[in-house]
Length: 172
Ligand code: S3P
Image 1 (tube, helix red, strand yellow):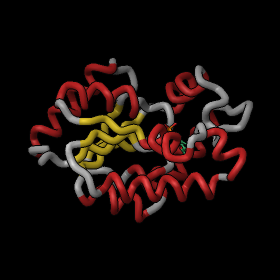
Image 2 (image 1 turned 60 degrees about the vertical axis):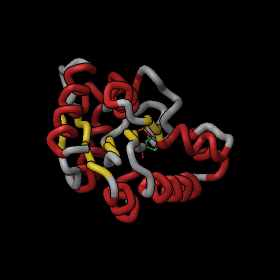
Image 3 (image 1 turned 180 degrees about the vertical axis):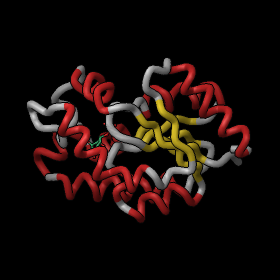
Image 4 (image 1 turned 90 degrees about the vertical axis):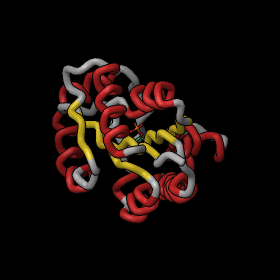
């Protein structure tokens, strides 16, 4: 019974792409919280925000965190705002190792700019400064991670290897 590996961090830090590779290498199951919420609700995340509002999304996210926190052997990619709720962190930490992926604001900007329109919290003409502002506000939550990995200027596989090393040290 392996502990879950829970990837937290801002939008565009690579939680999903890194997480799916880590899961593949460690023969664990990969779960992307946003995709699971989309399956449960039958709606893309951007639609949930637009039609039902952020409160509804956060409530689905909370239920998902509670549910996944009770499972094991998972690599979980959280949404960038999942850890803003203390109860979500508590649920996911219960049986999981929390690893935060960090990246510098410029790199985040470049990454999320490629997929404009899929991230409802970023307004249409968001800037690097908007991202810096959100990172500042969220820092206190991301800092609750057990480990932090700076992904800036690192390839996907270097980050994957770092996580695997941490997981092995921890006996995950
Ligand atoms: C959010 C991040 C998104 C998604 C939702 C809210 C956030 O996930 O959960 O749009 O509050 O930062 P990603 O981090 O996968 O983009």
